[in-house]
Image 1: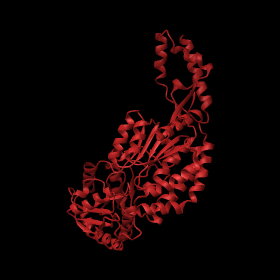
Image 2: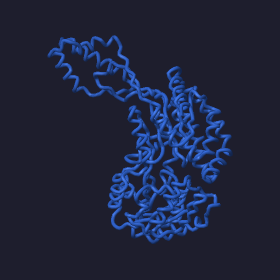
Image 3: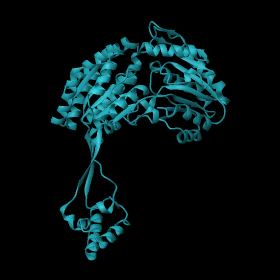
Image 4: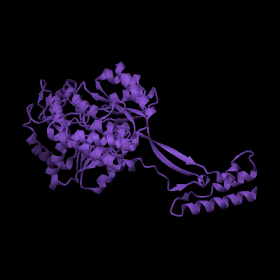
Length: 494
């Protein structure tokens, strides 16, 4: 454990000694992208060894995404870090020149999860380094030893030890780094319960955090669903649910089908699901990562009152087959918490979409993602107005988690803080205000000094009624003329 402390001190001292420029960061990331692009085989083999993750899923959802997002940040870093101005200025600040610059925070901690161990480690890591920070990266070695060893080898071959330190371990290592090392920001991806512990530990040092958590992401299928395309929609739903064996933070957690279309939708869902029923422990299908998760899922299947289709569990290989559970009620054990596995409960609802939206919010607060299967603009507007969620996805699934030109993050119990692309840069920088006051403006400013007089009070009251000055192509002339007039008026009063 002491080596972790020493490595942390090294990173902190290095940040004090040297502020990395954007060009230096881009050079590091370009080297990393080159090495990573040649590392698909060892990484995909390692993750296959750990929990049987299919190569295709790893390539599409993690490896390709990591390379694409890194290249996106490299190409746009100067723009992402560019100082900003404002479109208008209050009259009392008109003589100032100012800008908003983004500066690195310092040394940050990233704690990554086991379910998507490449992209959920690299997406925040790349942004943090691009922004100029030094990083401690805690990997889930206790869950995925083969993969973490492979990734650590790659990272340490590129990033100097005074820029990045990788911590491989489990709960003891995570607790040590949280409680014994002070960071300038903590970025955590994982469960809500662990997220609360991270937040509690961070509060001791007033360390800001980003919490990427989860929750029960609902699917709403209304009577306005396009029944002509129902098979396509069900294929999308099944893909979204059973990718990575349902171990996805934005996986569809349960389905709500309006009663008037329930039979037709279920007929299509079961028909398209039949292709998955032949999957077993030897198939190219992800297994559950650990025994605790397997036991939790198998116990849910034993306790549910719904009708199970599928439901095969193999304790030796930690395999749980794709499973649909129909005729589920709100008080069913499957509805008590995030499932995080290949089990899809289906509820038939009566009444309006509004009523079921209220029910969802009352039962499960704010999901990380909400899914609407409908061709109705009115349905869309209703969900947008009535349900708070990290993302809303219509007639598609999972895509909010991978689109790095959009912000990704939760709300309420599903977490807080955004990342991906430029939002990762924002997460790992501080917006600092820079103001410069010219000496020539002193004649205009001296009325703020003692003694305070009634004439000065009248002048300041007058200034309250002058609107903000717009910044445009005539900015300089407009501002200076305004200041001149105010100065002339003030001098006349005095």
